[in-house]
Length: 454
Image (cartoon, rainbow, N blue to C red; front, side):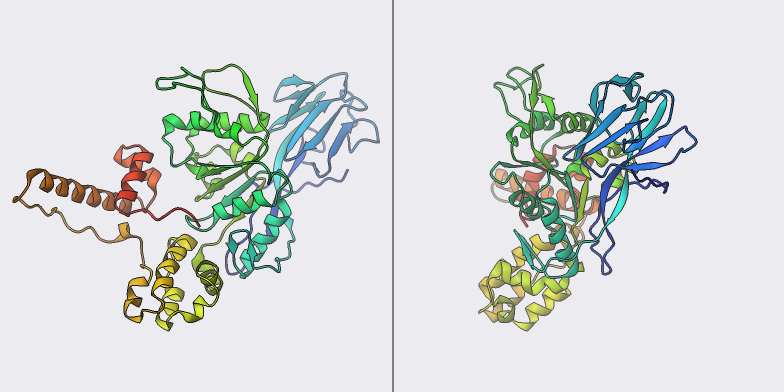
């Protein structure tokens, strides 16, 4: 089998979303020789089976006295790799433990006799011609980055490989996940969506893995978790960057072994689901900063699709307007509205555009109300606070005046809080010392969070 000795690079599979798109790349794994005269030599795991041993008919030939003629094989199973000992004399070891068969994890040390190899990822360029279509499921666009994304999604959808979707809020990560599921072999199975940011840390483990009656205070009955409900289909973990560090090893083990335990139970539960995750942050940067486990990052990022913000693909605006508002709407909009759409930065991305189109669609024939339908330049919480004092009235009904003051305080507090945290709800919840779910309800109450979807 061919080998190479290029330097190992942390993998990120990326569809570029800038003016000059970055090269496309895909995660590939290899075995790297350690502690020998050929130290640094790499053997790509490109086929379904790779055989290692001393005999010349192996894919990796290691002429070492402690290596058997046919020592082990590595079998590709979806996006996992199973190592199997072939009855070797000196055994096969994985991270110091002898194994008959076991799944490899990024960074694992594999030993064949006294020969050690590291299992690790690398970047491999992908040459993908842009799709000729301007739509894929709920995704719309004829710009080059979007058509490249369409082509990549169409290519990886039939596989069971894990996919990481990266992009700003409202950029279409949910639509991309739905497209992957609808084009997959699992389309007849369920698509289970779980938002890691919308559930408190104390409940998220139960939501993922489920629990038995009596597992904790308030567990009055058995609950089936997301992993189990997604069996036979796809599990979409949104905002995975908000997943608590202490829970990440449990998720990693479940994804590697395809087995987990409900809280309060010792009975293993098997599941078979395709995993798609989404993040508004660069998970590689988060892993390097110690805020996300590197081994979980590599497990999730077999493919990474980076969705561009709407401000970087303004040429798609007419197509998007007509996709959401009906054919011919772009040309029917007053010139002032079209110019405003093209000049706007769209901080809420496609989600914000859809809301603006809904307003404009109802006012297209009412020129006097056009200005009311124009998009805001920034989210409501980005404006300057109203002042140091809240308006107070000391006349009239006591309870009514008190309720007005409480509402004014809550809105002002939330506006300033989101301004300091740049709209990051998880960070805002931590700073305010409140549960994320409760904070979401307050934000919706005061219109400080945009509608879901997009």
